[in-house]
Structures are given as C-alpha cells and as structure tokens.
Image 1 (cartoon, one colour):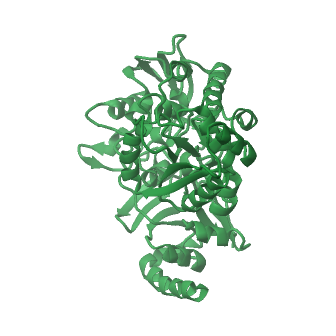
Image 2: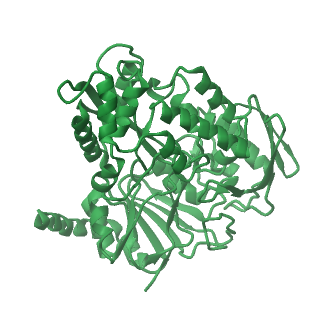
Length: 516
C-alpha cells in the first residue's frame, strides 16, 4: 500500500509540473503558492458565504474591526465605536488614511454603502441577517451611524470577522465584480478553477493584533492554486512547487511527525462539535437519558484516534477563543467520561446490557468524524445503548433531521453536528425555536436568556452566556466533543515561517517568509 501511494505521488508530480509552470519557479523566492482542492465561488463578499471564497477575500478586503486570540475587539478600518444606552444606535469612527487599491479613500460613506448593500433584500445576502435588524444608516463626518430595530450586542464582534469584510464601492459596477479592497493583497487575475493571483499592497499599514508585520506583506505575490486531487497537492508540496497545501487528515497525521514539514490547524476557528438528540422522543425527552449518553462518551478517544490528535477536546457549547468559553465551569456543569455513571442512570430508566436502549445514530460523512462515530457507537454499546449508525450526505441529513427533531414518537435518535462563528450568538441560531434543523428548545427560560444576551455587553453578557451554557449542559441538550469541528488543515515545509489561521479558519500571509 505504501508503494502504491508513492507511485501515485510520482505520477502526480508530472501533473503538477505542467499545471504550475513558471509560477512554480517563483514560489521559492517571492511568491506564496497555496494549493487547495476547490476554487472560490465569487469575490463579491455580499453574495457568498463559502469559506473557500472568504479565504481569498480576506486577503483583498478588510474589516471595520479585528479580533485577537481571545475574541477581543481591536481597531481595523474603524478606530473606535460607541453605542447608545438602549443598544439601538452605533457610531463607528473611521480611521484616517485607509486607501482602496484603486487610490480612492475608504471612508464612512464607503462603509455605509457596504451596510446598505449587504442588508438590502435585493442583494439577498446569506450574511445580511448577521448585521442585526438594521433600521437606517447615516454619515456624519468620519462616523457611520447605524440604527437598529432591536438591540444586538454581537454586532462589533461580527464586524471584526470575515463575514463582514468591506469592499470598496468601485468593486461593483452593475453585474461586474472587480476585487477592489483595502487589504494587504491586491487582485491581479483569476483563471477559474486554475489559479487566482494577488500581489502585495505596497502601501498597506497593519493594525491587526495577530499580525506582527507593520507594513506590506513580506512576499510579493500570493497565488491560490486549485489542485483537486489530494496526492497531487502533496506532490506539489513535497517538490517545493507549492508553499502551502491542504492535506487530507491521513496526510496531516503523517506530516506532523516529519521534521521537514509543519502542519497548521485552526485553533481560533470558532468551530465546536457536539452530540445532541431528537429531544422530544422518549427516553431522550428525559435529561437523565441525555446525560447518560454524555457519561458514556470519551471525547478524548475521538481526539486521539479519530482525529490523530489534531483537534482538542472541548467541554463547552461555546468554542475556545470566543467570549463566554470557560472550560472549567463547563466540565463542572456537563458530563465527563464515566461509564459506570452512565450504566447507573440507564438502570434507573429501565435499560442495561441485558435490556439495551435501541437508538439511531444519525450522522453526516466527513473525515475524522467517521472514525469518531464508530468510537462513540462502541462506547454507547458498552453501557447498554445499541445505536445503529445512519449516514447521509449533509444536505440530506439536514432535511432528515429537520423532520425527526420535530417528532414526539418514534425511534430514539442521537446525532452529531458542529457550528462555527466569531461570536457565541450562534447559540441563538442553534437553540432558539425553531433552531437549526428544528433542533431548537421550547423553553421560556432559555428563550429569554438567548434574547437577553443580545442586549448585554461586557461582563454582564459573559455571565448570561455562561448561564445559557449551564442550562444546555445540566439538561444534557448538548454533549460537546472537540474543536475545531471540521478541517481547514494546511501544511508547509519547515523553512516557512509566519503563517497563521485566525477566526473561522481564515489564513493570513502577511508575516510569511521562506528561509533559504
């Protein structure tokens, strides 16, 4: 098998040599080549929501604010903000001297154009609702004034994340999109499904707290190269024709133990994986049954075996690096691996090894998760739960679970999912009725807390987010597993320095340098 793998790689080298051409020679000197399996969908930040598109747009466009490794808000194109006592009016003050790549100034009027376009029903942006319920926008000197219909405290954090990147107005001319932004890289060309070429913005001034370089990127060019085949991407990386490549989980596990390579995960992804239930169907309408499943699961086995140690166990419904994450408190409120406790609870409910609880384990196929699902299935069997795995393609899984989660009778169902974001407000999306795939919880207390946290800031909001997590964990609605929940892995040779991935798996190349 090893011989066949190397043979495929040898064949892939020939393919990549032809595909990269002259660009490959430059990769070792002044060009970053990032090999990945798919191309971007669009460079219109208001029309798409795919990570592969935003990974490119993150380089060209910029955000009003930026986030540190704890989710703290720092200046971006805006230097500060103020919010009214009622939480309905925000005043964003723009930083002086922010220039678009075409020489125009990005000012409050340009920011207003972005707000108006992305929240317009005519745009039908998949990201529009994340701006809150915008009632009006206005410009006063350097300030953009945004008035909301309802308080929405996550707005500043959202404006520090990639889904809120701001285009220069000149980027949109009717139906035509030309990527004009204020970011560290300027658009050059795009040969779809082949390569997208950027060059450094010589006049760039950095204010992002996670970037050390104060000025323009060290490298001159950045090329996103589409190479669908995994072995071909690895061949390009090994031959030096690609500076970075997205490996499979198996390749990443191999490379991480090789001193000649570096493997990069996404610790600030905001991704959180979890187990949950069709909680209206008995016995999972009883919190004891849900918590029994939590005690049966050793999340570290998924981390170490299913994901080759490339993720970290996480006990909170809110992902690490986001406001409200407190691992110690979550472990106190939730469940830890204790199969004897699981057996004890199941016995109270009338189940055991001689009378197992028969359930469906509904999942979607994804690398790493597949192995984890088998591990969880075995762990459940050991305490008296026989869970039959049913695997569906993701869209079909959502459709199926949207029906099952609304049922009050039928086969008990356990399922897995994951969520990501730059702010824990995604708890509203998941758990407020109807919730994602109808998983929302009909509980007045929870509903009130989810609404209240949107009107709070600072320590008061953090405390409310902790209350929400305590409710979810003590009632066993969510059994957290690990973070990140799915993969945007990258790999490079060990002579590459300065690469990082920030919130929602966005790569940053400003600090990247290649040693001779």
